[in-house]
Image (cartoon, rainbow, N blue to C red; front, side, top):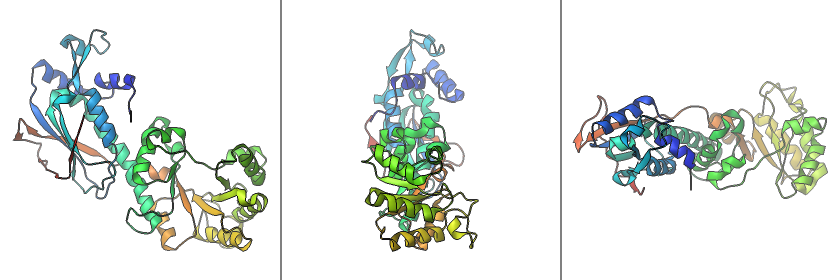
Length: 369
């Protein structure tokens, strides 16, 4: 897998994405000829996090460990005279694997070698691990909630619908992290690049609006143009999931794979007006399921989306709500999972800031750079 373009690697080597004090530390060490070997220890503080980003960090260290020569060119970031001196072979890196479940404060990686060669990478590898682990952890929480227990066993699928909730250039890595976390599908082509799976999706409200709010017509057109795709009809446009689901099923029959309920959190579906239950509720799912089954459409699945987080998914699982899958968006990317790096050894001698210390982890495996 290739995670970084050559242009990105060049910018990383020149410290373009790095906090300036790391770049300055590198220049001081190189200027003084200080090539002391350190052990950099990386950890995070949250219990049960699902690690992701290790493969990316491996490539980062392989491609961007070293320095520019001649020395005068290092301070001139635009100099065309600089020649990159690769020093990745002087690092010894050991780490846990993508997908490992972490304990709080557990060491996830040791980087050993002259700090002068990789000081400029600290911002980047910590950011990679933080972003990827946050997404994979959020995804795993939803997957486990959908399975009804805290395990890696397969439950009802989680579809990664987080494209619209964050900056679009995050999608490649987010798609990979979602896969590590156990997502069954992603929704953009970019998300598939590192995850090795096809993008899936339903019908947007906008397309239904263009066809005058006619859900059935829109579903027919989707099948006409994409006959090989599983047809999932979005049925809440007119705030009547029950009637729309039945109408689509009656018209399309075996062509219909699923209906998707996405009722806004501030609305009550027409079929539940007497109960005043807002959004996609357990009662709404049961009402649609019973109606479909009664008319012989038991094979039509029900996908739910809109405001689903691990807590709500777990509640649905506990109550045995007959939802067949969950489309989750912002709940998979919100929150944080910070990582910290500390020098804990210099030339084999233990040394670290107050409150930190060298912590061996015998689960770490050597990474070949």
